[in-house]
Amino acid sequence: MRRLLRIAVIGAVVIFLGLAAAGCGKKENPLPIRGVAAVTIFTAKAVPADVGINLSWSVQGTAAALFKVFRSEPVDCPTCPRDYRLLVQLPLNDNRLVREGEAGFRYLDRDVKGGAYGYQVVGCDSAGRCGPVSPEATISQDVEEGERKTP
Image (cartoon, rainbow, N blue to C red; front, side, top):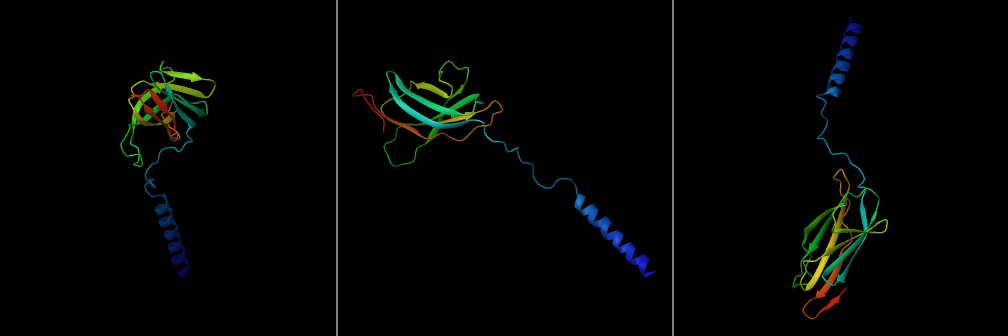
């Protein structure tokens, strides 16, 4: 009798643990698939042009489908943090985007006035995954005197 009771208790415990481990099937909130961003901007440079500022950058990886260019406007406080805002999104077939070699790209920002501008670029692949923000490219431009300086 004790033996049957012991077997029944062990069986009940095994069934209980089996049901508890199975649960409802949801273990935690779903997370997006973690993938490595295929596009990384590893250099960015801003240089003066006759009609604006030429921003150029180089990419690592070949999966770029779109570039997002961010610009900070000139501020009176040189030590204050810059506020970057999306300036333009450039798909690879955009005629404003110029390819330079195998890994380089260039964009001409024509809408500039005097002051110090900052630029950052983000590269995205065709699935919409974007890589990290590029290093900052800054330029100081004095339009009134016709002088342009790069820091």
